[in-house]
Image (cartoon, rainbow, N blue to C red; front, side):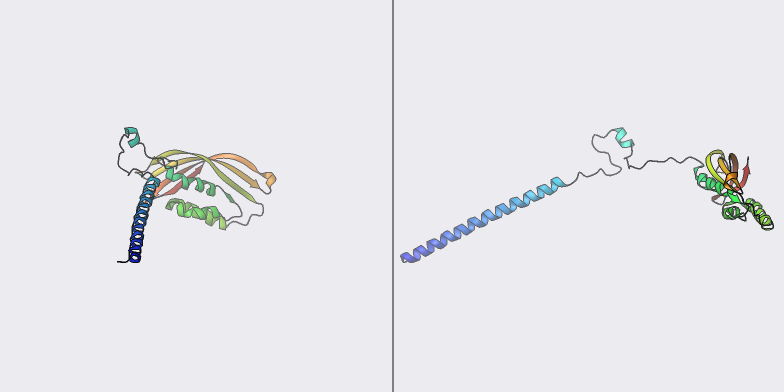
Length: 203
């Protein structure tokens, strides 16, 4: 083996050793980086929320019985509250009319009346049609102020509500306006599963 060949082989051996060392260092650095990334991802994850129906360790009875806050106010519905959305608009429409409107207020309310109430309203409408047109305007507008649930028997399907109203009567021009308060008693019955008005009595 010549000296030149020995030098070449020695150089090749050194290169091979350096390549192996470089590969090992690169591999170790790569695995360390991967391990650090996984650790960071684990740390950045949000704390899991407790599963509904489970009790966390250290929780008190108060923690278990108190429902979590949803940020929405809880409204407790009282018996008869479902009638309010029917009665208050009914009173305002019933009590707002003019002598030039052909009792359209009654026509609009027919769908929420009982059969006997419908018969009464239809009679009023028919009689109004036979009257001559009134040239002098006479109108009333009504606003519901507050109500009192006088009777509520859901099982029997009967209820009664007293509504306090403010009414404004106008004859001819706005200078003849009169504002006054008046109560009205509304009687209701349940038809099938829906409440309907069975009577309206101004006090």
